[in-house]
Structures are given as structure tokens and as C-alpha cells.
View (cartoon, rainbow, N blue to C red):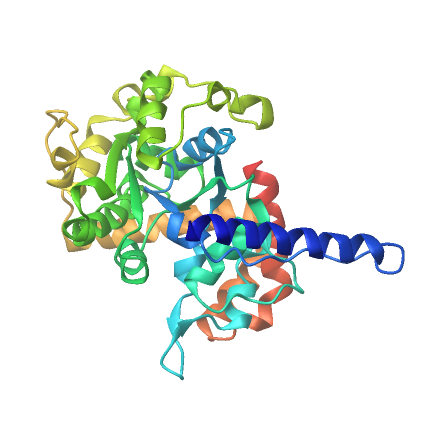
Length: 349
């Protein structure tokens, strides 16, 4: 009864504001509708998985369901969340406004939401589809997510780390597979650090392989978990994006495209995380470089990443941003960073 009254109240408020906007439409073309949508954060679901694990693909599939609103990557919600001088958790306006992904969701003139719950509510209100369930995508900081939302439902998406390592090189984030798998390790260690805090019904784990090999079955399971019916449009995401239909060739590419040494480097670095996530060891000897070997690899990796950054984003802008960060004065490179962000968006499309 109470929820019905709340829904009617929200509708009445929305309709009243709509009428006011219509009346002043000729005088004020910028009139916008803002309605209290504070319930969204309590309904939200989080997709948690490493970068290059299929999180964007899953986001597109989920968002194609009319009962789900998935705005895509929202790592900035927790990347910039900090304890402020007043003791509350919130955001420093200048810091979060410099975030590329934040600026994809908010304009320069939008007020910065005060809390993580406010942030989710505002994003959901901007993207909501008639009361659809909001599903955010996060690649890290699961313990912080659960600190803020102990009851948050989590979809844990896992891809073979050997394929993630290869893909990271292609993105220009790493110069070799040893460093390319580093972020996967961080994401999965975050899972291990927080998984014990989750009730059995609070999470579900699916693999990239399942999503590709049996997409309808896997998406039906996820819809059941979210609490909405499966919709056939979830497999028509390619009509609204540059992503193609599920392709089995994307699974286990490491078997044909990585050398025995590269496989050994990845398996040696991820250790027991490989089998704990359900992936079989290759049988190749593990390669675990000593201190000197790691130093040499690190220098080569940095050089390779810099070559890609200079070619893709421009040497001057890349150096400007790096220097400003070292000096702790990122604001000095704001224009350079935004030019790089524009190129990143163009590259990712």
C-alpha cells in the first residue's frame, strides 16, 4: 500500500512539473524535469569483472532489455569516493569532474551528487526506462562497493586471464602479457576479499565463455537473478552498437596466439587464481621471473605503453599529463587530458 502511494506521489510530482515546463516552454527552452528517484540505488545491481572480460558486451545485452537500464562503465562512482573533512563519504568536485567516464554521464554544469547513493540515483534517473532496474558496471573496488551498499546484488563476470592478458596489449594498456594480466589479478583479488560478505542469493558468477557459447541460456539466468523476464532484444544489441553477435572464435584465443613462454608467464603470475576460477592449466612450465628479470620487463613494458600513447594520443599531450601527475598538479594539464579523452572515446567506438 505504501509503495503504491509513493509511486502515485512520484507520478503526480512528475506530471505537475511537466505541466509547469510546458507552460513556460516558450520562455525557457532549458526547463528540465527533476523527480525524486532515491529508490534506484536500493534496487541497483552491479556487474563486477575485470576490464577486457566482456563487461561492455554484457552491458549492451542487458541494456537491450526494456526492463533493465545499464548505463555502462561507472567506475568513477567508487574511484573518487573519499572521506571528506566533515567525516562523510563523498566527492571532491574538481577531481571527479576531470574523470572521462563521469563526463560521459554529466555535463559541466550538473551539480556533483553528494554520495554514492545520490550518484546512482542521478545516473539512473538520466537513463531510466519506465522503472527499469539499474545495472552498473564496475571493474574494481568491490570491498568499497559493499561498504556503501551491503545488500548490493553482484553479477561476477570472469574471463580466462590468458585471453585478458592478450587483449590488454591490443588496447595499449600493457606491453607484454605479464603486465597485461595485472588488472585481472587485482579485480579477482578484490572478489576474494569481499565474497565472504555476500549472502548466497546475493551474487551470481558467469563466465565469458558461457556468455558467448550459450548467450540466451546465460542471459535468462541473469534476468532471473535481476528479477526481470528475458527479452529476445538482448541478442539484437548489435543493431545499436559496433559489437558483433557472440562469436565462439573469441574464446580461448590464447591457445593459438600465445607462445609457451607467454602462457607460462601468465599462469606463473596468476597462480592459484587460475584454477579457483575454473580454468585448466595449460601444462606448460610456469615462468616466474626473478627481481632482475621483472625490472627489465617493467622497463620494456613502460616503453611499449609509451610508444602506443605517443602514437595514439600525441607525444606532447601525453608528456604534459604525465609530468603534471608527477608534480601533483593534474589541473595544469586539464586541456591536454581532455584532448586525450576525446581520442580515447574515438578509439573505443
